[in-house]
Image (cartoon, rainbow, N blue to C red):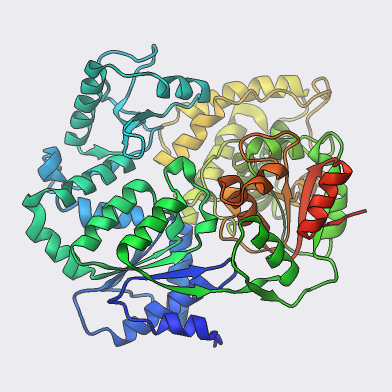
Amino acid sequence: MIEFSKNQRDYINAPLNKNIYLRACPGAGKTEVIAAKVAMEARQWQHFPSGIAVLSFSRSATAELSDRIAKVRRGNTNTHPHFVGTVDSFVLNHLVAPFAHSLTGYGGKDGDYSLKVVGPEALCFHRIKYPIEKQPIFANRYDWDAAVGRYLFWHASEPIRRKLNNVVLADWQIDHLKAAKVRFNAAGFATYKDVQRLAIEILTKGQFKERLALLVRRFPSIIIDECQDLSAEQIMIFTHLADLGVRFHLVGDLAQAIYGFRNCFPAAVSDFIAYLGCAEMPLVENFRSGQRIVDLHGKLVQASKTQGKANYAQVTCYLMEYKNCPSEVLGRFDALAVDHQEPVIVARGHSTLSKLRARDAEPGPAQLLAAAINAYVSDAPGSLYNALTTFSRYLAENCMECETLGVDRFHRPARISFAESWNQFLSECLLQLAAKGLGKQDVTWQQWCKLLRVALSDLVASPSYEEDCQRIVASLKTKKHSAPPGLGAEQVAPEEKNIQKIKRMRRLATIHEVKGETHDLTMLVSSAKQGEGSHWKEWLDDPHSEAARFAYVASSRPRHILIWAVKALKAPDRKRLADLGFYTYP
């Protein structure tokens, strides 16, 4: 039985028919509080068939909410008439699906009029007639961006994407883009941005007024977890629903808004909170971290005073310096992390993480893949588990830009619902690679990598995978898979001890990947140079910047120890960080 604080109990007992902003600091136990709130309302609910919509932004977060609610309800997983799901699924299924065919002209298939949502990597036959910047433009690879008031393009190549998005479009090009979208939607397809655009159109057209009134009666109250992640388009949608009578409970921490690239800005969410006239209810007790860690990460964004747990040790915030490469601190990190079960190394971007993976003592991509295939063809006990573990880690580090489930032992992407499907995909990939002769490893690395490149091309050509898996496999084709430096003429043949070593590799993750997690020990790594919010000076220069919020999110993850790894400091900079609360690690 959870003993809730007074502030937590106040929210649990707060009325649903009033707009509320539950401002929850890191480690405030907001998930448990939301679960208790929903469970209490469900027990007392007398408005069937109306229900509460409880929304978050990822399947993993939704799954955690559902599990917590079921636990509070003593195993009862039936939430009807209430809805627990993602913001995207709510907008698609409850707002857009009943009306979209009236706007798009989609004739349906076998009585099914629902739109099929596809990502930019999917094969699409709808495109504009004339290329832009010599690039064919497919309808699922561009969207109207309400925040900037123009079309934005997607491309697998970052330079090409930047080039496309810097083009000043002529009127005739805009007309062609609109026409291709119309054909795309009329065929029953849409991107997530299309869904949001259609939702706004439905909410602003008078022809749907009566049916929208039924939606408001169906879900008179909506609880949104991690509300700081609301995009400009989503705020527009929920503003219209609020005008129709829906009441909102917004739960989150504006200082944890780190998705600016998705048009998620704390100022816009703050304006939405003000528009609703929300009563603010604070949760200012951090039940996760020691007080020194709480004080330190609070200074980064000038957060209000928060109470943390009693300090676990005399020193809980360490500073580690490196001269040239961040990998220089890994030995000290390992020594400090030896007594902690969940040590995680975090950085702003993959470029910094790649430097941490590049040490000679650690296996590179080709070595990981060779070890996975070697384990797959082995008859040794536990070899299949070793193979799937190693191969999934290889994919997570080299081929997946999407969010992964941190608790999943095989790095399953959050967008893939069933572990069985993901595990089968991993096994099928390894089976095909082994069938191409890659299990025979008494050859040199140069020979093996040459065979690997051919095998991967055949793997990419396979049409049997679902969309998310196909996207991951497609990214393999862009990888060079060169022989490990200095080992080209040596034999592959990894030994079992190397496989065991790979299993013990420390976890590395981006700040976006660890958002919402709890670690025993977290090391946040600063880049050597400033740029893109990845350097420690950028984290401290402006408490209202997204860079400061990056550091705030990462630094609020650990229970016991926080480490910042930074390039060698001069005396004034070292004092600046000491004043923040850091102690130099010997």
